[in-house]
Length: 263
Image (cartoon, rainbow, N blue to C red; front, side, top):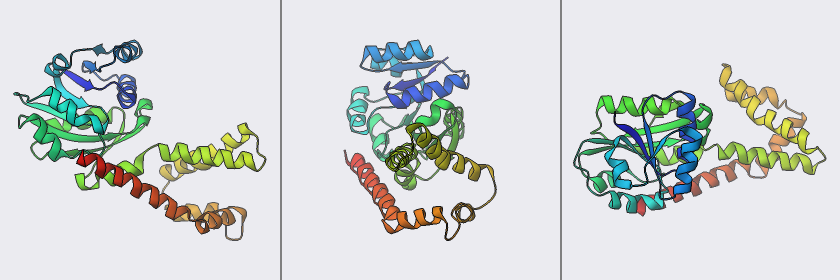
């Protein structure tokens, strides 16, 4: 049986391997990376097969996952060289468009792009997918199924990929949590209580929204009663430019994605 092969053994590969193992993904998994210590660690953690030789790894692939940094994609695909058999390849590299991927390995290779979350390691990830027009219905289903093992899958047009990439990252939640904890401690709350209160504010509130049927604006009105303390906090955040700062951050991310596309 041909394998699902990951080229690159970094953090997102590790997160996906954890999610796939949790879901008891049935296909053989092979990982290639230049660093032998990284490969051995993944082998110990997830029981996957490691392949130090790049071309041997590619030759064993039924589904080829390109899981390297965006600035390394070009050189990696050049090293792999033209492929003379039909193959489905999936790029996890932010900002690198399908047009450049198609040109690199030749027409027998059909591509998808995927943006999986590191939260995939828990089985509760979120992955955006977009497909090369030449990719068959069966191949699309296979790619969807792989990522569905590790969480929710959303298919979107490639034109929306950069906007999705800068919005969906779990780093937003972690960053907000860290900032809220630090602010709570600065006004006198203990570290333990600050973590509990901030995590409830972010995680439990959002979980309630997802589980219920009330629109977000209604929940916000319920939580921040006019004239109350929460309403005062929200008004101060807005007056300080909180919405503008968030939008500014997302635009900076989109600029970086476009820079990746030019490399």
